[in-house]
Length: 205
Image 1 (cartoon, rainbow, N blue to C red):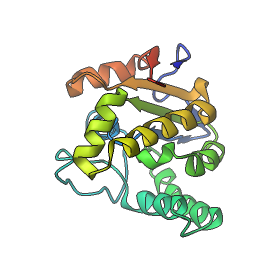
Image 2: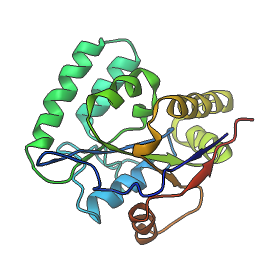
Image 3: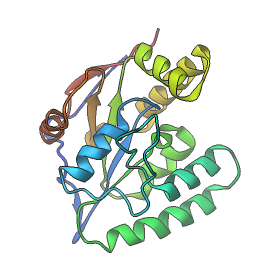
């Protein structure tokens, strides 16, 4: 399976009125979303949240992920709340972000789950999605080490999230970042500014 980035899509290109629409970072777990969100927040002036989760062993440099957004996404995926509750939580949080009147974003690998991603793509008028990717082997191995998941669980999650993003994400608003190779923050920033990676492949086998 191969997917393409539409040429010319860049961070900061999409605006509605006087407010910056968000940059939304997503991908399967352990796909490089934290590294990309860190660069956006620390290097590129894109505020990633008021309540960022603390650094832990699996993300020693920080996850740059909102505690509240992660909480409501988890509740929805685990069927502990409905879309109305989730939507109200998203509205309340993003209202505070819009009030900043400056570039902002959100990051959560759970955004790649179809239960969350489906309504998410209809909520914002013109966001920029940054879709992160690592190879199947890297993703599965990292999930096993970080979360103790079985290989079959890691592979299922990898395919499920990638398939969901293929079906739901609007290509004309998506930047693809292949995080399979180690890169410095400067290199990641340069690639984001250039519109990401024009072609990324994920292993469907």
